[in-house]
Amino acid sequence: RHPLDTLLFFGLRDDMHVVEIAPGGGWYTEIIAPYVNERGQYYGAGADAESPQESVRAGVARFKAKLAEHPELYGKAIVTELAPPHKTVIAPAGSADLVLTFRNVHNWLAAGTADQVFAAMYQALKPGGILGVVEHRGKAEVAQDLKAKSGYVNEAYVIDLAKKAGFELVEKSEINANPQDTKDYEGGVWTLPPTLRLKEQDRERYLAIGESDRMTLKFVKPIKK
Image (cartoon, rainbow, N blue to C red):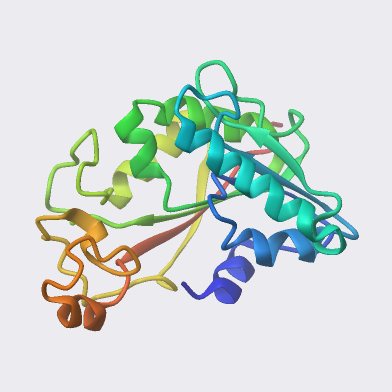
């Protein structure tokens, strides 16, 4: 996942106000939140703490407990909620220097909330602020499944979603590319590690391929003149 190279590409500094979208178990949180804890501000825009799904509520509780367990690392961290259409304030409007999302766009397509989420990210950023997107990259020659059932999303489709929300593309990177990923698995992207959906079936083959081929895109919220 090349976290150092990825975060440097997005321009992370320790004095930034940073929003991480859907932090999940906190893989990137463990890097970002302590780094900005003293001079900046970390927001973890998680799921709905009042979701009707017990598993979702439990995930939110685990994330909050993780932060509370180490106040020396996460003492200033703020947990917000991203659950369109009712909960979309992920940070004070116009306050964030950097919004980051790692492998989430396919979930928004599946839920039909992609436009609302991109709008929420745009709203949170200050003019000149950066949106960093990492996502499983689909085959450009294959039409985008609007529900992204395979977990893969075409790079051009993501760029169009961001532009529709008002963002401008700044730069692309191949930091997280994986040319070994053939993107044609019956079980979708989750066939590959770390999920290994097929368990022992062809396990060594999928381990040899590694994690998915991923786009790494940097966008900016324009400064209006």
